[in-house]
Length: 377
Image (cartoon, rainbow, N blue to C red; front, side, top):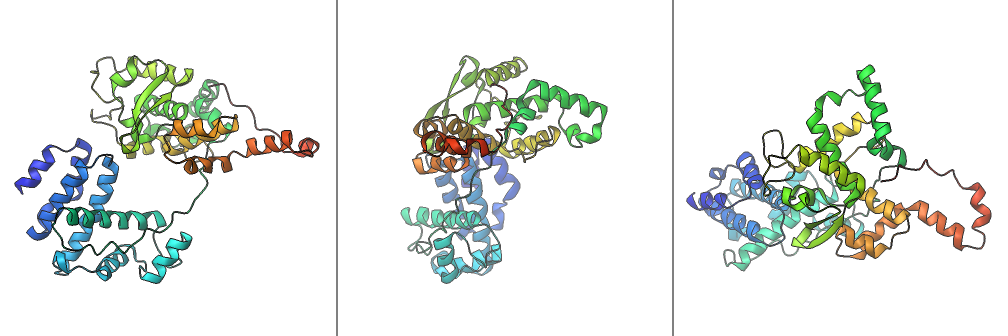
């Protein structure tokens, strides 16, 4: 157990907290525990693997090893059918060749009880485990190499409409809602769960995410030094350790400056966002805060960090931004990932048709009314 203790001492706090809460290594016999510790170290040392990915992989991998141990299987005895049996027992789905092939072709399987994305993560975790063990000579064969991830269905991103954005960002709309809620608290049954400090934190997070298009993981890695003396742009580290520059509008910079005044005692190396216990804020807590804020603001759509990122991209394209510039701002490696936002940007497509098609202008009078303009950001 000393090897595991040594590994724990070098781990990020959020990953250590997750392992301490979810996994008791003493439940594993030595033959499996040794492999788990090695994998643990490999995952943490791998460049570009986020703490979120480590948590997800270790969670699935730990359950998998316990399942094999309960069936008294030796590591070198595991076959592909055992992996299928574990997947089926975990998800109550059918993971035979026929249904995996069906999911791989269509992104959907009628027999599955879990999402295609969850299927993919389970398989990725197990493949990563066996690949790591094979590279280090700990296992002679890789029974997971024949599995392929099901294809991800391409769903359209959901964005905040103009009315929801006004309720969230426009000072006059916010003041009006606050007034109404003070007079009639039943209008916002969740408002009492966000005190003044948490509400300010949630609002500045919304401003930063919408203004810059950052991922929530990128935002939560920021320190005080990253933002204190940078008026309109930030250097962030994204997926795979790639650095990029993102930009802040006047509203986001103003909200950030107001927030920094409440953090005057913080050191430059401290995380920008802390929870009430003085620990780094976790993405789950942010999602919870934004959900409460969305209810407080009476938004039509559920408010989430990624919805703000989607809105950032969609609004840029609607305003005529070059798609390659949007790709750079979002930190996408592939242009095809960014192109999905063009399907959301129907306003731009409609305007392009009106301006460029010979019969487009004649149909302008029949077009639906334009939504109310958003306040300038």
